[in-house]
Structure formats: structure tokens, C-alpha cells
View 1 (tube, rainbow, N blue to C red):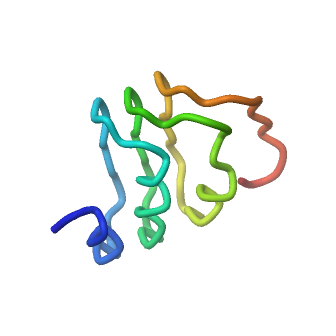
View 2: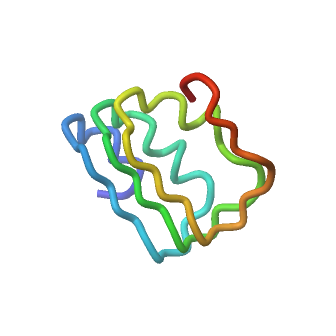
Amino acid sequence: MGFEGLSKLKKLEILNIDSNWFNKTIVKQSSGLASLKALVASNNDIEGFFPFQELSIFENLVTLDLSSNRLNGSLSMQGKF
């Protein structure tokens, strides 16, 4: 199963893809994981502006680790993202 099959894992709560070479598309490919509570995607090749819109689909997300990537911009914790 490739990453296009991630959306089939409807009950997945923790996804740790730390220390790979994934880029920003991994966030979009994870979009079907409605029950996801923790996403660890540190030490990857995610670059550009913080993916607010892509992450807004994770309504149950409690833990997000995007450290050691190359993200730009500022992070505001106003409201729900």
C-alpha cells in the first residue's frame, strides 16, 4: 500500500513519519485520516508556508510536530486551525 492508500486507514490515530524525505504533499495524502490525533512529520523535506488549510481537515488533531522542516511564516494560535 502506497501513501495513496492512507485514506483507507479510517481509525488511525497516530501517524509518525519522522526522519524521511517527505514533502508537503504527504499532508494532503493524509487528508482522509479523520480520526488522526497525532501527526509527527519532523525531520522531513516540508518547505514553504505553514500548511494551515491542509491541516484544518484534522478536527481531532491534538499533537502536531513539524519541527526540523523548512517552513516559513508565523504561527498564530488564534481559533482552530
